[in-house]
Image (cartoon, rainbow, N blue to C red; front, top):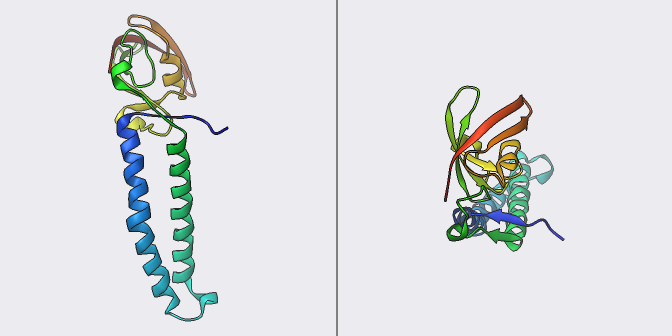
Length: 157
């Protein structure tokens, strides 16, 4: 059985939009590129044709990947997120106990992870360590850079 994919409603919409774009826009553009490259003649030494075919394979592969994710998606109901304990879908404010800096993370499924924008995976070292903990608890994270300690300051939706 395929692995369940946890998504927020925003993440679900992004995947659906990407799939729609791939099927309706990118496929057509790629078909036109293949047709144009064929018109250049000998396909055995036609780099434009090879490139267009490679792009076609990437597009089709991504379509299958997204369709599989959507078929196995579980959408997190933001209204049912418990703000007493950290769970997938929680927005968590933590204080780094070493430098006393506060950071805010949104815990999401691995498909939506975007650490540069504060979205961390429930499978990441920090995300998995925070899961199940409550406000004022200190969590020790085993990260590649060593142990880090975070105090949970706030949990919201």
